[in-house]
Length: 303
Image 1 (cartoon, rainbow, N blue to C red):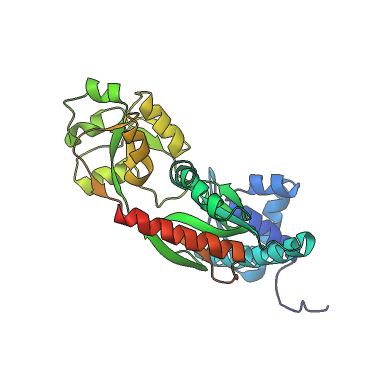
Image 2: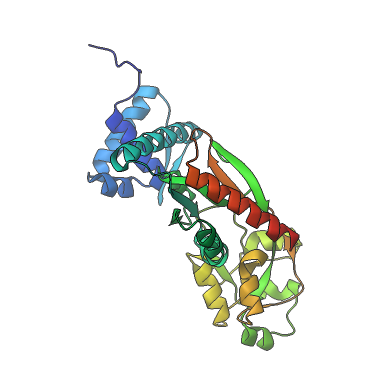
């Protein structure tokens, strides 16, 4: 038997593992690869048997990566992304005037997109594509060169630069605030709360807000939404109180669509970062967009 040159599991099995790790779901990986979930499970088991350690923890609602699985996924995602980048450049020729930036729905709709005309007016020849997703695993896609992320400034294989920090406070619609004008920070757990089911665990929810503020509470109740922007729409419709991120909700407050309720205000535990891949040279278009974002962030910090 001829030994494989790199002493790796089969590329097919590694591709199956990468898709499963990216989705954290054998079923979704199977749909992407057009195979059965059983075939995915067999490929994963084959890799685990070959390397001698489990890569996933099987749960009733899906799977989670083990520490070994996280390490393998980080390397494969970077390698596959780089290979895809090279193939794309070969197929499409010069992409020096194209750049893709990734960020969450909330950052895109409430901060980045309203400011983008400033970049387009300065660099009309640059085509900016936006990958908008609340699942940060999508940010590893090959076409993504820059990312704006909220968190604590440390992600595998990424260079990071702090853009600015933020503060958080409760917000709701004007009529709701009038109806509950006697509300205090301590009474918030008893009021209708609006929750965001973030995929990214770095974002702060009501439970963490109450713990940081020292407010006694049980399990926070209320309605749940999959996107921050939709949560704010519900708040504007007087359906309850949302956690407001100052840099994102300020335009809605200025327009009178949202108001602050109670005097509760906390520094956000993380910050907004601009990041890029350590193992990739940025295109000229990405360099221009990074420079512009740095200038924009400096202006934001002064205000």
